[in-house]
Amino acid sequence: MTESQTINKGESPNGDNSNSLKLHQQVLGSRRFSNYWWATIVSLGATGFLLAGISSYLQVNLLLVTDPTQLVFVPQGLVMGLYGVAGLLLALYLWLIILWDIGGGYNEFDRQSGMVKIFRWGFPGKNRRVELSCRTQDVQSVRIDIKEGLNPRRVLYLKIKGRRDIPLTRAGQPMPLKDLETKAAELAKFLGVPLEGL
Image (cartoon, rainbow, N blue to C red; front, side):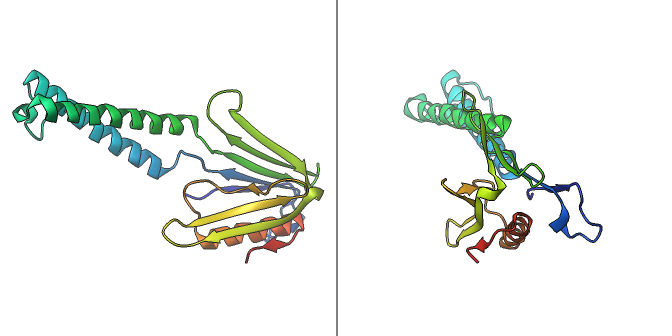
């Protein structure tokens, strides 16, 4: 799943976005397939461990696939029950970050008002809404940071005068290189700033 991009007002019919006045990019947060997958797997596995521990204690088989009543409760059943509780706590955390859509939001570049707005959802609390804004004339460049290897990193940054570089792409799951380069080139062209890192 890739981040969607909407261009409003004045988009030319041939696809040239240089005349448009507003660029809006949705940023995918924690509501991505891999998080749903792992939350489901951890939930099922942890429930199995917990039921095995309870079955071993009660000497009643609560599982369909195996018979944990043969386990000695101390230490085997107890340890499986503890693994189950720890797994369910991890699963709860994963489901909550999906529910809260941590890291999701949008980037909005408006040449008409001359403003850039970056919005992300954070954890509940006073900093739940993370919003940054600046003037388009303060944007110095668009920078790509690429690191390959076992833990690849492909991030698009906005370099702003007098501030730290602001990441524009989603966290956690790197974008395909081709998509990142296309997005960076379009943004640099839209803002009329140089592209760094290629």
